[in-house]
Figure 1 (cartoon, rainbow, N blue to C red):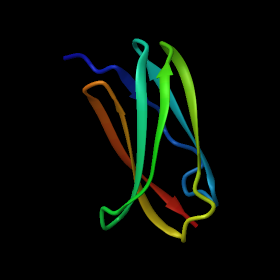
Figure 2 (cartoon, one colour; figure 1 turned 30 degrees about the vertical axis):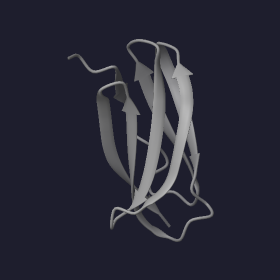
Figure 3 (tube, rainbow, N blue to C red; figure 1 turned 180 degrees about the vertical axis):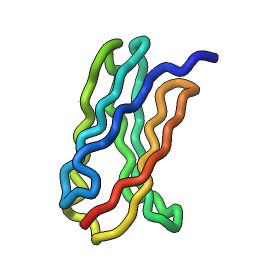
Figure 4 (cartoon, rainbow, N blue to C red; figure 1 turned 180 degrees about the horizontal axis):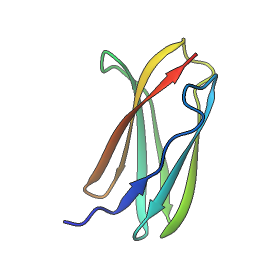
Length: 88
């Protein structure tokens, strides 16, 4: 199956709280994000609903979380992408 989206470089990373995830959708699809700590404990889950095809930006506010390294996972249909963000 072809991927439903591609993810650009998250910025700023490292961050002090707010991070932007540039997302290119190849077709309209429901998008979910999960943020977990480095031990795998889920901290945030959010359903962004159906994003339209084309360029989208997802904003995450991590300012209430302790400093550290976190993993964010974006899922749309059968496509999943995970990367890390450093909160300083």
